[in-house]
Image (cartoon, rainbow, N blue to C red):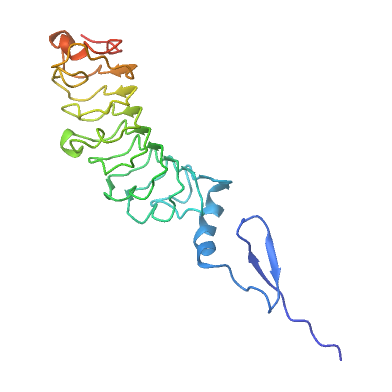
Length: 246
């Protein structure tokens, strides 16, 4: 009698595109990392270095496990409520994260601590009341349309970011403007509750020759402040704040 051939087992290989046949002498299961990545790439779109998880159904309430070497994550318009220290702990390759339009009310302070390549972070349209520590190489931060107040923003959280060029803090509840880094080109602070400025907010009050060359655009409209009462606050800028003011 002819001996029966051993049955082949099918596993998914690490590119998530085609099954790989193996026999009893070959691998019979994917490693732990593959098991972790597979569900994300079934419900999201995984391209080389990019993961798109937008308006996922059923509702996505946490940051999904990411494939190795992910550089760009777009997880907009879901129902994520919190970002933990573990969510990005194994993905130090991230350069851009966009979590706009979620329900995020809390970010643990070390959530971005390992992301030393992160350049763009977008958290607009969430429910944040506090900002965590931010990566040193960050160039753009967008937290428009949140619930931030001055007490939820650490005093020097932006001042230490010497590559930060674009800062969007509009439509929050800030009562004051935090210290800003010299690298900043654009800052939007519209529709907050800012009532006053100082000569040092944008300029250096003790140095009338100082010019803030990098700053190209300041937006302060929609705040209970009369700019005419603070003429020296903008003397170092090359252009006055944009927008409509009373």
